[in-house]
Length: 350
Image: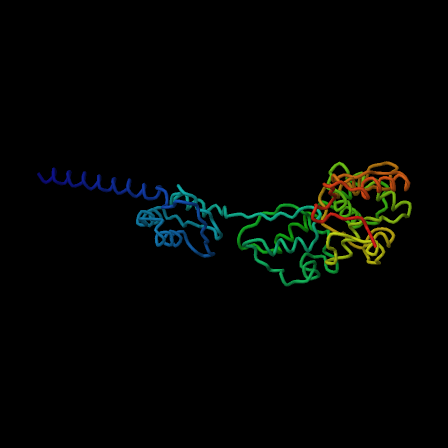
Protein backbone atom coordinates (compact mmCIF):
# COMPACT_ATOMS: atom_id res chain seq x y z
CA UNK A 1 0.00 0.00 0.00
CA UNK A 2 2.79 2.39 0.94
CA UNK A 3 4.60 1.56 -2.28
CA UNK A 4 1.48 2.33 -4.27
CA UNK A 5 1.02 5.65 -2.53
CA UNK A 6 4.66 6.52 -3.04
CA UNK A 7 4.41 5.59 -6.69
CA UNK A 8 1.27 7.68 -7.12
CA UNK A 9 2.84 10.62 -5.33
CA UNK A 10 6.01 10.35 -7.42
CA UNK A 11 3.98 10.16 -10.63
CA UNK A 12 1.90 13.17 -9.61
CA UNK A 13 5.04 15.10 -8.69
CA UNK A 14 6.66 14.14 -11.96
CA UNK A 15 3.58 15.22 -13.90
CA UNK A 16 3.44 18.45 -11.92
CA UNK A 17 7.08 19.18 -12.63
CA UNK A 18 6.53 18.35 -16.28
CA UNK A 19 3.53 20.63 -16.51
CA UNK A 20 5.47 23.40 -14.75
CA UNK A 21 8.36 22.94 -17.18
CA UNK A 22 6.01 23.10 -20.16
CA UNK A 23 4.33 26.18 -18.73
CA UNK A 24 7.69 27.82 -18.03
CA UNK A 25 8.94 27.00 -21.52
CA UNK A 26 5.80 28.53 -22.96
CA UNK A 27 6.30 31.68 -20.89
CA UNK A 28 9.86 32.02 -22.14
CA UNK A 29 8.85 31.62 -25.77
CA UNK A 30 5.46 33.25 -25.99
CA UNK A 31 5.35 36.70 -27.65
CA UNK A 32 5.61 39.82 -25.54
CA UNK A 33 2.41 41.82 -25.15
CA UNK A 34 3.24 44.11 -28.06
CA UNK A 35 0.72 45.43 -30.58
CA UNK A 36 3.18 47.67 -32.41
CA UNK A 37 6.95 47.97 -32.60
CA UNK A 38 8.70 50.12 -30.02
CA UNK A 39 12.24 51.04 -29.01
CA UNK A 40 13.87 50.51 -25.64
CA UNK A 41 17.11 51.93 -24.26
CA UNK A 42 19.46 49.58 -22.43
CA UNK A 43 21.98 51.59 -20.39
CA UNK A 44 25.50 50.31 -19.85
CA UNK A 45 25.75 47.98 -16.85
CA UNK A 46 22.12 46.87 -16.92
CA UNK A 47 21.49 43.11 -16.86
CA UNK A 48 18.93 41.14 -18.79
CA UNK A 49 16.86 40.45 -15.70
CA UNK A 50 16.61 44.18 -15.04
CA UNK A 51 15.42 44.76 -18.60
CA UNK A 52 12.83 42.00 -18.20
CA UNK A 53 11.62 43.54 -14.93
CA UNK A 54 11.16 46.88 -16.69
CA UNK A 55 9.08 45.15 -19.37
CA UNK A 56 7.04 43.42 -16.65
CA UNK A 57 6.26 46.79 -15.02
CA UNK A 58 5.09 48.03 -18.40
CA UNK A 59 2.80 45.03 -18.82
CA UNK A 60 4.72 43.48 -21.69
CA UNK A 61 5.72 40.37 -19.71
CA UNK A 62 3.28 38.44 -17.48
CA UNK A 63 5.50 36.06 -15.50
CA UNK A 64 9.21 36.36 -14.74
CA UNK A 65 9.58 33.30 -12.47
CA UNK A 66 10.36 30.94 -15.38
CA UNK A 67 13.08 33.32 -16.56
CA UNK A 68 14.61 33.55 -13.08
CA UNK A 69 14.69 29.75 -12.75
CA UNK A 70 16.06 29.25 -16.25
CA UNK A 71 18.89 31.76 -15.75
CA UNK A 72 19.76 30.17 -12.39
CA UNK A 73 19.63 26.57 -13.64
CA UNK A 74 21.69 27.30 -16.75
CA UNK A 75 23.99 29.75 -14.94
CA UNK A 76 23.64 31.94 -18.02
CA UNK A 77 25.28 35.35 -17.38
CA UNK A 78 23.13 36.96 -20.10
CA UNK A 79 25.87 39.39 -21.15
CA UNK A 80 23.83 41.95 -23.01
CA UNK A 81 25.09 45.05 -24.78
CA UNK A 82 24.01 48.61 -24.11
CA UNK A 83 22.15 50.54 -26.76
CA UNK A 84 18.77 51.25 -28.32
CA UNK A 85 16.82 48.22 -29.54
CA UNK A 86 13.61 47.86 -31.55
CA UNK A 87 11.07 45.38 -30.23
CA UNK A 88 8.74 43.95 -32.85
CA UNK A 89 5.39 42.23 -32.25
CA UNK A 90 5.91 38.48 -31.93
CA UNK A 91 9.24 38.80 -30.09
CA UNK A 92 9.62 36.41 -27.14
CA UNK A 93 11.72 36.79 -23.99
CA UNK A 94 14.34 34.36 -25.29
CA UNK A 95 14.47 36.12 -28.66
CA UNK A 96 14.81 39.41 -26.80
CA UNK A 97 17.75 37.96 -24.87
CA UNK A 98 19.45 36.95 -28.12
CA UNK A 99 18.78 40.39 -29.60
CA UNK A 100 20.32 42.20 -26.62
CA UNK A 101 23.32 39.87 -26.67
CA UNK A 102 23.85 40.45 -30.39
CA UNK A 103 24.25 44.21 -30.10
CA UNK A 104 22.02 44.77 -33.14
CA UNK A 105 20.98 48.24 -32.08
CA UNK A 106 18.62 50.56 -33.95
CA UNK A 107 20.46 52.31 -36.76
CA UNK A 108 19.82 55.69 -38.34
CA UNK A 109 21.20 57.11 -41.56
CA UNK A 110 22.48 60.50 -42.61
CA UNK A 111 22.94 61.37 -46.29
CA UNK A 112 25.33 64.05 -47.51
CA UNK A 113 24.72 64.70 -51.23
CA UNK A 114 27.61 65.35 -53.58
CA UNK A 115 28.37 69.00 -54.20
CA UNK A 116 27.27 70.29 -50.79
CA UNK A 117 29.58 72.46 -48.72
CA UNK A 118 31.17 71.64 -45.39
CA UNK A 119 28.75 74.06 -43.70
CA UNK A 120 25.86 72.10 -45.22
CA UNK A 121 27.41 68.92 -43.81
CA UNK A 122 27.57 70.46 -40.33
CA UNK A 123 23.97 71.64 -40.56
CA UNK A 124 22.81 68.12 -41.43
CA UNK A 125 24.80 66.70 -38.55
CA UNK A 126 23.19 69.19 -36.19
CA UNK A 127 19.73 68.17 -37.39
CA UNK A 128 20.36 64.40 -37.22
CA UNK A 129 18.25 62.76 -34.48
CA UNK A 130 19.99 60.95 -31.61
CA UNK A 131 23.46 62.04 -32.72
CA UNK A 132 25.48 63.64 -29.95
CA UNK A 133 26.44 67.17 -31.11
CA UNK A 134 29.97 67.14 -29.73
CA UNK A 135 31.34 69.59 -32.33
CA UNK A 136 28.32 71.89 -32.49
CA UNK A 137 30.22 74.77 -30.87
CA UNK A 138 33.62 73.90 -32.32
CA UNK A 139 35.33 76.02 -34.93
CA UNK A 140 36.35 74.54 -38.26
CA UNK A 141 39.97 74.65 -37.10
CA UNK A 142 39.13 72.71 -33.92
CA UNK A 143 37.41 70.01 -35.97
CA UNK A 144 40.34 69.64 -38.34
CA UNK A 145 42.77 69.54 -35.43
CA UNK A 146 40.75 66.71 -33.86
CA UNK A 147 41.00 64.85 -37.18
CA UNK A 148 44.75 65.26 -37.39
CA UNK A 149 44.90 68.03 -40.00
CA UNK A 150 45.50 71.23 -38.04
CA UNK A 151 45.62 74.44 -40.11
CA UNK A 152 44.00 72.64 -43.08
CA UNK A 153 40.71 74.15 -44.36
CA UNK A 154 37.85 71.70 -43.93
CA UNK A 155 36.12 72.32 -47.25
CA UNK A 156 36.34 69.39 -49.63
CA UNK A 157 37.93 66.95 -47.17
CA UNK A 158 34.75 64.98 -46.34
CA UNK A 159 33.32 62.32 -48.62
CA UNK A 160 29.62 62.82 -49.46
CA UNK A 161 27.73 59.60 -48.88
CA UNK A 162 25.16 57.94 -46.61
CA UNK A 163 26.45 57.24 -43.11
CA UNK A 164 24.85 54.86 -40.61
CA UNK A 165 24.94 55.59 -36.90
CA UNK A 166 23.23 54.57 -33.68
CA UNK A 167 21.93 56.47 -30.70
CA UNK A 168 24.77 57.78 -28.58
CA UNK A 169 27.28 58.16 -31.38
CA UNK A 170 28.93 61.58 -31.75
CA UNK A 171 28.90 63.84 -34.78
CA UNK A 172 32.70 63.67 -34.66
CA UNK A 173 32.44 59.93 -35.38
CA UNK A 174 30.63 60.66 -38.66
CA UNK A 175 33.05 63.45 -39.53
CA UNK A 176 35.98 61.10 -38.95
CA UNK A 177 34.47 58.42 -41.19
CA UNK A 178 33.82 60.91 -43.99
CA UNK A 179 37.28 62.43 -43.63
CA UNK A 180 39.06 59.09 -43.74
CA UNK A 181 37.07 57.96 -46.77
CA UNK A 182 37.98 61.10 -48.67
CA UNK A 183 41.64 60.75 -47.74
CA UNK A 184 41.75 57.13 -48.93
CA UNK A 185 39.89 57.89 -52.15
CA UNK A 186 42.05 60.89 -53.00
CA UNK A 187 45.18 58.84 -52.42
CA UNK A 188 43.83 56.13 -54.74
CA UNK A 189 42.78 58.37 -57.62
CA UNK A 190 46.00 60.39 -57.39
CA UNK A 191 48.03 57.19 -57.77
CA UNK A 192 45.98 56.35 -60.88
CA UNK A 193 46.16 59.84 -62.42
CA UNK A 194 46.82 60.57 -66.04
CA UNK A 195 50.11 62.32 -66.85
CA UNK A 196 50.88 65.12 -67.27
CA UNK A 197 48.41 67.25 -65.32
CA UNK A 198 48.68 70.89 -64.23
CA UNK A 199 48.36 70.02 -60.53
CA UNK A 200 51.17 70.37 -58.04
CA UNK A 201 49.57 68.07 -55.45
CA UNK A 202 46.60 65.77 -54.73
CA UNK A 203 45.00 68.73 -52.95
CA UNK A 204 44.82 70.65 -56.22
CA UNK A 205 43.07 67.67 -57.79
CA UNK A 206 40.60 67.82 -54.90
CA UNK A 207 40.02 71.52 -55.60
CA UNK A 208 39.41 70.78 -59.29
CA UNK A 209 37.05 67.92 -58.43
CA UNK A 210 34.94 70.25 -56.29
CA UNK A 211 34.58 72.67 -59.20
CA UNK A 212 33.64 69.85 -61.57
CA UNK A 213 31.06 68.63 -59.05
CA UNK A 214 29.43 72.05 -58.87
CA UNK A 215 29.50 72.61 -62.62
CA UNK A 216 27.51 69.62 -63.77
CA UNK A 217 25.08 67.04 -62.52
CA UNK A 218 25.30 65.06 -65.78
CA UNK A 219 27.64 62.10 -65.16
CA UNK A 220 28.74 61.80 -68.78
CA UNK A 221 29.97 65.40 -68.82
CA UNK A 222 32.39 65.32 -65.90
CA UNK A 223 35.45 64.28 -67.89
CA UNK A 224 34.59 66.82 -70.61
CA UNK A 225 34.29 69.58 -68.00
CA UNK A 226 37.62 68.47 -66.53
CA UNK A 227 39.18 68.55 -69.98
CA UNK A 228 38.11 72.16 -70.56
CA UNK A 229 39.47 73.32 -67.20
CA UNK A 230 42.76 71.43 -67.59
CA UNK A 231 43.35 72.91 -71.04
CA UNK A 232 42.58 76.39 -69.75
CA UNK A 233 45.07 75.94 -66.90
CA UNK A 234 47.71 74.68 -69.30
CA UNK A 235 47.27 77.75 -71.53
CA UNK A 236 47.25 80.18 -68.62
CA UNK A 237 43.59 81.09 -69.16
CA UNK A 238 41.35 81.93 -66.21
CA UNK A 239 38.87 79.20 -65.35
CA UNK A 240 35.96 81.68 -65.25
CA UNK A 241 33.51 79.32 -63.57
CA UNK A 242 30.45 80.71 -61.82
CA UNK A 243 30.37 78.26 -58.87
CA UNK A 244 33.66 79.70 -57.60
CA UNK A 245 32.14 83.18 -57.68
CA UNK A 246 29.12 81.91 -55.74
CA UNK A 247 31.33 80.26 -53.15
CA UNK A 248 33.29 83.47 -52.68
CA UNK A 249 30.04 85.41 -52.19
CA UNK A 250 29.09 83.21 -49.23
CA UNK A 251 25.75 84.10 -47.64
CA UNK A 252 25.34 87.05 -50.00
CA UNK A 253 24.43 84.68 -52.81
CA UNK A 254 20.65 84.64 -53.17
CA UNK A 255 20.17 82.84 -56.48
CA UNK A 256 21.73 85.20 -58.98
CA UNK A 257 25.11 86.69 -59.78
CA UNK A 258 25.72 90.03 -61.50
CA UNK A 259 28.57 91.38 -63.58
CA UNK A 260 29.61 93.29 -60.48
CA UNK A 261 29.90 89.97 -58.66
CA UNK A 262 32.04 88.58 -61.47
CA UNK A 263 34.47 91.46 -61.04
CA UNK A 264 34.65 91.27 -57.24
CA UNK A 265 38.18 90.15 -56.21
CA UNK A 266 37.55 87.30 -53.77
CA UNK A 267 40.15 84.52 -53.34
CA UNK A 268 37.77 82.11 -55.12
CA UNK A 269 36.63 84.29 -58.01
CA UNK A 270 38.17 82.57 -61.02
CA UNK A 271 37.04 85.43 -63.27
CA UNK A 272 39.64 87.52 -61.41
CA UNK A 273 42.33 85.10 -60.22
CA UNK A 274 44.55 82.88 -62.35
CA UNK A 275 44.76 79.17 -61.66
CA UNK A 276 42.81 77.27 -59.06
CA UNK A 277 41.16 78.85 -56.00
CA UNK A 278 42.95 78.30 -52.67
CA UNK A 279 40.52 75.65 -51.38
CA UNK A 280 37.79 73.33 -52.70
CA UNK A 281 34.36 74.91 -53.04
CA UNK A 282 32.30 71.81 -52.16
CA UNK A 283 32.45 68.14 -51.22
CA UNK A 284 33.09 66.21 -54.45
CA UNK A 285 32.00 62.65 -55.06
CA UNK A 286 34.09 59.83 -56.48
CA UNK A 287 33.11 60.42 -60.12
CA UNK A 288 34.22 64.07 -59.96
CA UNK A 289 37.49 63.07 -58.27
CA UNK A 290 38.24 60.53 -60.96
CA UNK A 291 37.35 63.01 -63.69
CA UNK A 292 39.74 65.58 -62.23
CA UNK A 293 42.71 63.23 -62.77
CA UNK A 294 41.43 61.68 -66.00
CA UNK A 295 40.16 64.60 -68.13
CA UNK A 296 38.74 63.88 -71.57
CA UNK A 297 41.04 64.85 -74.45
CA UNK A 298 39.78 67.41 -76.93
CA UNK A 299 40.04 70.97 -78.22
CA UNK A 300 37.18 72.65 -76.37
CA UNK A 301 37.88 75.61 -74.08
CA UNK A 302 34.37 76.84 -73.32
CA UNK A 303 30.98 75.49 -72.26
CA UNK A 304 27.57 76.93 -71.45
CA UNK A 305 24.47 75.43 -69.83
CA UNK A 306 21.80 74.37 -72.31
CA UNK A 307 19.06 74.62 -69.71
CA UNK A 308 18.32 70.89 -69.51
CA UNK A 309 21.10 70.08 -67.05
CA UNK A 310 23.75 69.54 -69.76
CA UNK A 311 26.22 71.86 -71.50
CA UNK A 312 27.22 72.94 -74.98
CA UNK A 313 31.01 72.74 -75.49
CA UNK A 314 32.85 75.07 -77.86
CA UNK A 315 36.35 75.25 -79.35
CA UNK A 316 36.43 79.00 -80.00
CA UNK A 317 35.18 82.12 -78.27
CA UNK A 318 33.06 82.99 -81.31
CA UNK A 319 31.30 79.62 -81.15
CA UNK A 320 30.89 80.03 -77.40
CA UNK A 321 29.31 83.47 -77.77
CA UNK A 322 26.79 82.06 -80.26
CA UNK A 323 25.93 79.30 -77.78
CA UNK A 324 25.50 81.87 -74.99
CA UNK A 325 23.05 83.82 -77.13
CA UNK A 326 21.16 80.63 -77.97
CA UNK A 327 20.95 79.09 -74.50
CA UNK A 328 21.38 81.95 -72.02
CA UNK A 329 19.86 85.04 -73.59
CA UNK A 330 16.80 83.19 -74.92
CA UNK A 331 16.07 80.86 -72.08
CA UNK A 332 13.28 78.32 -72.27
CA UNK A 333 10.60 78.36 -69.57
CA UNK A 334 11.81 75.10 -68.00
CA UNK A 335 15.46 76.18 -67.99
CA UNK A 336 17.54 74.51 -65.33
CA UNK A 337 21.25 74.14 -64.63
CA UNK A 338 23.42 72.70 -61.88
CA UNK A 339 22.96 73.03 -58.94
CA UNK A 340 19.27 72.44 -58.40
CA UNK A 341 16.58 74.74 -59.82
CA UNK A 342 16.28 76.63 -56.52
CA UNK A 343 19.86 77.81 -57.00
CA UNK A 344 19.73 78.34 -60.76
CA UNK A 345 21.95 81.14 -61.94
CA UNK A 346 20.54 83.93 -64.10
CA UNK A 347 22.36 85.94 -66.76
CA UNK A 348 24.80 88.40 -65.25
CA UNK A 349 23.64 91.99 -65.37
CA UNK A 350 24.75 95.32 -63.98
